Each structure stands twice: as structure tokens, then as C-alpha cells.
Length: 69
Image (cartoon, rainbow, N blue to C red; front, side, top):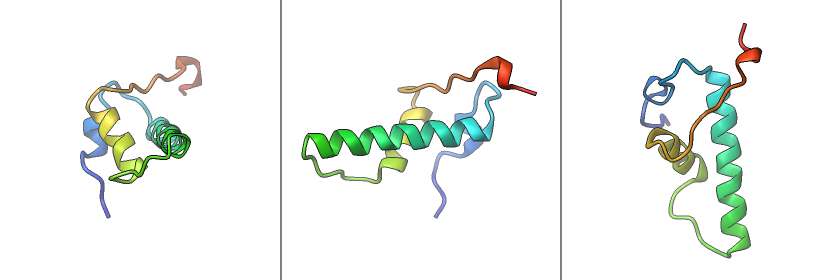
């Protein structure tokens, strides 16, 4: 299954794919944890929600420039 939007649509400031994966995983864990603590049932998968939030600019990927090659 492919997620939409495409990776190139999310990575607008030349961030790495690795940073995207880490950001999506961290945000998905936050979404899952919040739902569990508040006893909420999620309508869609946390990874899809995290990708959508990054795409819509609700969350941003911030890379440490010193980690770049």
C-alpha cells in the first residue's frame, strides 16, 4: 500500500528520507499514546495521520545541519 502524498511533496526543504521516517514514526507513536491515554478509538492508522500532518504543515521536520554529510 502506498501512502499519499508522495515523499517529494513532504520533503520540501531538502530533508533526508531518514528524517521523514523518524518524524513519522515519532508522531505516530504520540498519536497512539494520546489515543490510549484518552481512551479514544482512532478512525485511521496513526502513520497515515502523521504523514498527513507533516504534509499539511501541522508538524515540521527539523534536522540538525551538523548531521548532514
